Image (tube, rainbow, N blue to C red; front, side, top):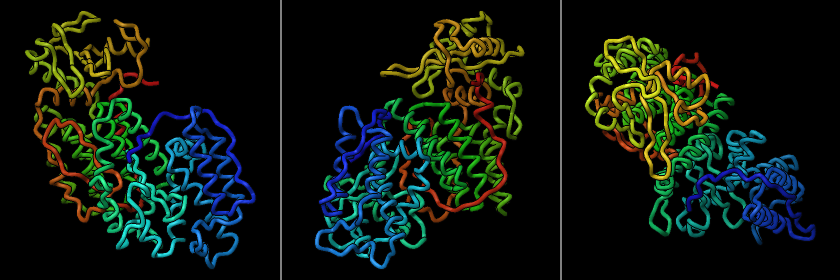
Amino acid sequence: MLSPIPPSSVPSRSAEPPSAFLHPRDQCRALIESLERTIASPGGAGAADFEAFLAAVADIADIADVPGAAPYWVQHRDAHDLRALRHALAYCQLTSYPEARRYLVDTIRHYPVATGECSLRVLQSLTPELRAEMLFLSASPWCPLDDAVKIFNDGLITLKIPRTSWRVPILPVCVNQARGGITANEMFQLLSTRSTHGMTIGQAISRGRYGLLREDGQALADWHLKLGHAYAAAQLSPLAAMEYVTACEAALSVDSLLSAVRGIDGALSAINDCTSVGVVREQGARLLGMLDLRGLRLISAEAALLLANKLASLACPALGEALRANARRGFEPLGLPTRTGLSVDELAPAIRRTIARHRGALAAGGLHFSTYRIRFDGLRDPYAGVDFREGAAQAWVLLASRHPASGDAGVFDIVTSATGARAAQTALHPQTMRSLVNGDLFQGILVLDLLQAAGGDVPALNWRAILKPALPAPTMFAPLALPAAGPSTSGEMPCVAAGMATRPAFELRRRIRHMRH
């Protein structure tokens, strides 16, 4: 049932046109079957194939697709309505294929915003009886669940319109109180529907996101970042926040730190653009709870300070003050002021103190953060020959010698800031001479958090208990099972509302990266 997003398909060919003598219903089916054959072929499908499909559907004179039935979804509509509905159905169908979704996102910027509007248009066109059948809300299922539902590990669900060849994606913009929209209760019932194998749709999504290989988790994180960018560009800030937080979850599940940082920055920016307290609390709880779970507690504390300011602007000063008080528990044990934007120089003494506390473990082989080993052999920079001294004005950074791959742990070496600067300037690793890429060299707050988490120094901050989002709505995106570096938090679910405000100055990505391209 699960179909993870595979690598892009580049080759393309023209679609097979349906015979003009076929019934329109059969023409639709023939076009869909032709496209699916192309996608399954060794060369795969490309942009030209998807464009040909869209054009061919537009040329079909009628879209009735139920044998012996009237065109129930087009009754009492004029020609303009029919053309718009045909257009919407074609785009909806493409979402059932990962290759086509990438085309809709990357090439024509249609998915997920415009595609979601197409999906809502189709839902509005269905009769109540057919809609209930499609959502598996009727007393008797119209067919086995596995025959009608496609589930993808990015959380997308596509449903077949009963007794047709067409599929409709259930996108976040469809889950609302608009005419034809899917209510929160309907979404909950759909996610709770069980297949013949006994697993619910929600459980199937969650299972498909668990235990991913690093490259698959990275691809999933990058996909959610793209969706976050698309929603942000459309000023749908609550949905952007949801996607960015989900991207961070996917990235942290495979220790892709830079992608996680991109997700954090995007989420905080989007949350700050929301005017709904419910959205701020819900997505804030997801983000802070996830960072706390992974042991990145200083970053979570700094993010909480920004959320506190946002909540104060939304007339929730008591909740904001509770966040600030809890954030102090992350800063004060490290001897740091409780504020955002701490510089590399301000953090350097705390990093040295943390290294000093773990001299024994570092000398005995290093500290461990999930799939990474943090190495500091001989307590000296192996490339500059500089010995560590806690009281000296030294700044230490993390340089990746390798990232996790094929069951082997990744390795970060602790090196001086000067070594890091030379490596950033040459874009070469000082020992292996391999080319450095973004995510190989970190400084500042992320270095401190990784050392703290690896050493088990900071207690859990339990943000979820403070934010306690009220009336959570069912989500299409099941939280990932993250490897724990602290106590687990319960699953979080997003709310949806829109708004704009002033952008925060968190910029974690800029502050933790020692090299920039």
